[in-house]
Length: 142
Image (tube, rainbow, N blue to C red):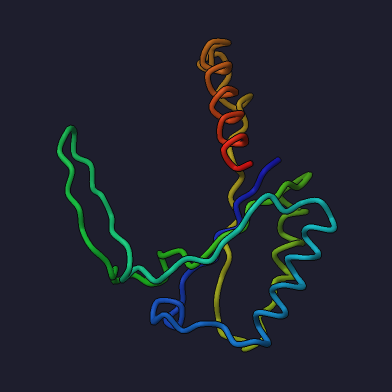
């Protein structure tokens, strides 16, 4: 199963405060553990919402709202994408994330849909098209 570990924003991350060398080192070591265990599929930190935008959809209409966005606790500061055997295993990985400064924060864990989750709605033709797209993305990534 794939899980997205969603790092929620804090006042510091929204202010654009960059991590210090100690935290970067600890996070690098944590990421290395994930890689050695064969569970890391990807992950990145995100710039503050002041450098982003939201697109609101209403039927065919689109409305763009530039950041920053007010509700810091609802924003995302970064993510990991991991492969784990269960939600419980994903939780155990998250418990090991460094929090050197002790700032109150949270990481949300969400399972990523697997093609089988869509049942009969994902026809063989749709599944083949999805497989082709994934192959092309992998090819482009090199």
